[in-house]
Length: 413
Image (tube, rainbow, N blue to C red; front, top):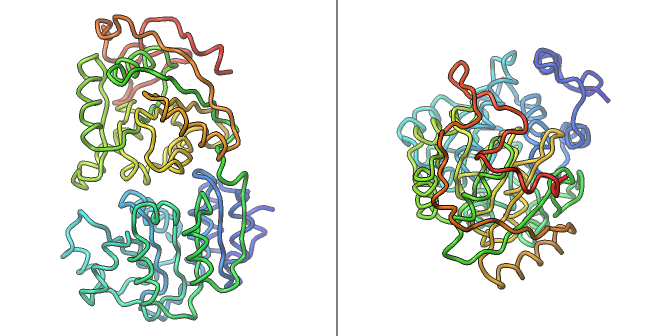
């Protein structure tokens, strides 16, 4: 099936044609018709499968231009994801002049958000905490909401938003259509769907609770005081490419950043306490290729939508094991191969990784790293192997971060 064969209005088909989007992804092909028919839908798919467009297109089509109230509310876990969804709404509504969307999230000027809400938007995208704040201030009214979307539902519950979400749902009409999209179907997602959805149609795309087949997974077991050395050793051996490093806390993000800078790298960082303007600047630099290594926490990473991340490194094993799926799902996207690397420092962590193996039904291979004298081996050129062109870096194939042979390449294929 092609988009032109779907029951979409011409204004949307025009945009899809302009963007040269011909064939919908599986989640789009299966979800869009059901959403257009008014059914509640549970969409289970991994990151990078096109689920945002699966609910954005039907919402745009169903907005009543004669109704100047909030008709659609989209909830998601982070401000970056809020911004990403709003951008897609703006792009795909270019021929629908009656569409007015507003993004509301913490860390931004609430007075400006109140001003925007007074202009009577018909679509609101927001994080649960800030949406609830506006409800309490009576600056956001949801009695006319026709479509409610819970995007990245599993992650919102992992972040402790369950109570807020239930309160927000109670402010919407019972007659609403509810759409829930999630990478995993955990107990809380199951509970919410049972309590607040009407005969939902479940659409599963790919293997659930598993990683993508395109991702090669490897782990290392090193002493706790050698973790940063292990990271340096790993980066020196990896093929050059966009790299995402996960830490569990913002303090650890800062420590890893300082160490890598000392070793000659130029990483960027992203965590939840950064001002929005700074977070936006960092993401723009990462997407454009001005920086190649990004160190982040789970909270900040939810809005990272970059298709060409080659490596994901778990410097810390995630505290919530399901986050392992979300993390490594940032690589191996859009039909490309990806690599996930995890650094462990205890037998207990190794046992937890075995639990992850059972959960994802995949093998995570143990390999060794060279740690002797690694602190003394610094990069002579901070941009070794990169050619700067037009403000960004052109990456050479088969180029590694440092000068040593790539010991892992043969084992990764």
